Image 1: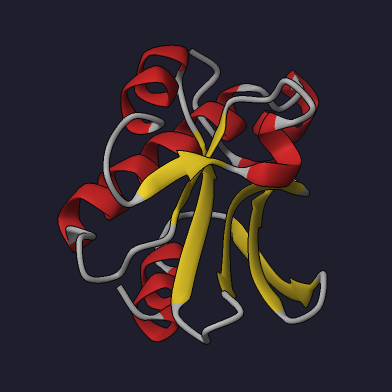
Image 2: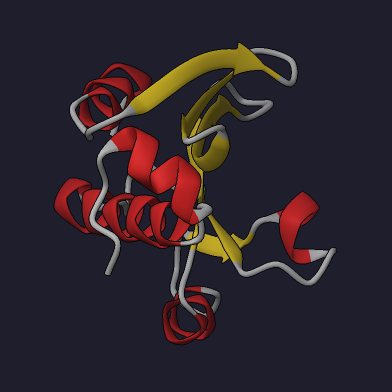
Length: 121
């Protein structure tokens, strides 16, 4: 997945906002909370970070091309970084980004969810 594809995918999710921050990272949020980050590694290859469920976190941290996200995981958060574009399956990565979006949206306050018109389930 390229950064262009990543940004196009994230921009199509309802109620998302985009900001470039943290040294040029493509940061996607819902309700002001981060759900996905795209950035360039030192070798200029794309990498993507997203929140993962506990099961997905433990599965992906052992999968080739994925690792616990260095900054987030070191603080006990279940965030994964996909870093190998050769191995990456675009549809698989989109699935995990969508799951991150869903988890972050569900964690928003009722007030923010109501303001965004999100389901209160």
